[in-house]
Image: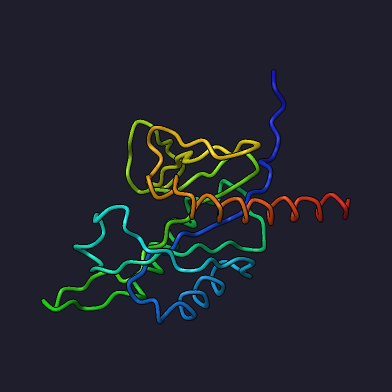
Amino acid sequence: MGEIKCFPSYKLIIGVLTTVCYKKNEILEVLSGELGEIDYVSSFIDFNYTDYYNREMGDNIKRFFVSFKNLIDPSSLADIKILTNKLEKQFTENNQSGVESRRVNFDPGILNLSRLILASTKDNAHRVPLDKGIYGEITLLFQKKGIQALPWSYIDYQSREYTEIFFEIREIFRSDLKKIEDQI
């Protein structure tokens, strides 16, 4: 029989979709106020992989990624997804028709040396129930010389721009682990 152990720590990342780029500092303040010190922020990337969000958010959507200094227990991912859904409401605005719409979308995930897991409210065959109506999805696998996408991996998460960011964050995570080892 296997021995039950605590989960190893993961790096929390959030992919931020937005049409209000001028509010980036405000977005970062809200995230750091709720989730702790930020240790990485990417540049804006044009989000032109799909028009899925255009109807709700509008055109000219940009994405940037954020990671956080404090490593987390991966079992907290469901609670983080619930929190980020609430935080999105702080950035809603009325559109031209007077209907409230999101201007910011937070996609939380966790990363370790071997994989990137994203949280979702949507069930699917490749997603595992976590807690409180939230699912987890292994989105990418890290390998020595690249990233392996899976059949369900979002096309943007497979892009060179995103994978370079994930490798940068992964190296920060590797450094975090080394610091922990050196303290032991």
